Image 1 (cartoon, rainbow, N blue to C red):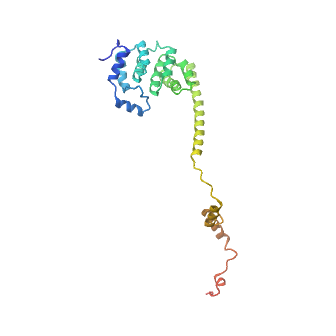
Image 2: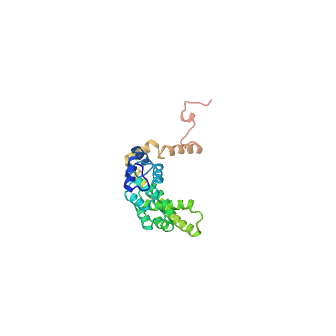
Image 3: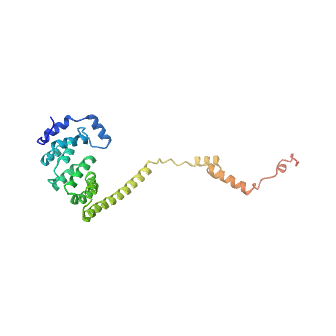
Length: 242
């Protein structure tokens, strides 16, 4: 049975279960969507259901309480922005466990005009999805609240500056961890003993490596023959000059 405006949260959830798809759940996981409670409905399907059941704030709260991914998205689609309280918004934010839910709920919070209070609050929060909510609201407000006074813009800018500072600190910490990991990953070769060093000097000459030996040979050529050099006819008396 297709749900309608009078349908309860339980009846709507049963309808959502009937529309579920395991194949869609596998596809969601590839995009980083939390699928532990997912039924496998697309946002297109959920918005179609939302148009059918209409707005009902009390029912939206019940849908959110279920913890099901699709029910929570449908709750954000069908909640009444004018009825949403700060306490309810904070409760929803604390329960967010996926970027997809965060971005959907952010639209509702801005429509409820709670962004002035929640953006600075959430931007200073250490939890990943709560902080993401702050910047998702900034993006939504930038699109839908273009005619807001300068005080609102200053509030958004303050939250953005807080994020920039945190990102810079995070980049520095990650860089330090990466450097330490590289050092630990480099193999430590055993140092050669005296016998090995002597053998290496015998193979490569007094200059150490073959490269240094080659450079030394070129230097000797520029400086002329060594002191022990003698013309061929003096080195071998049997040879005569032509």
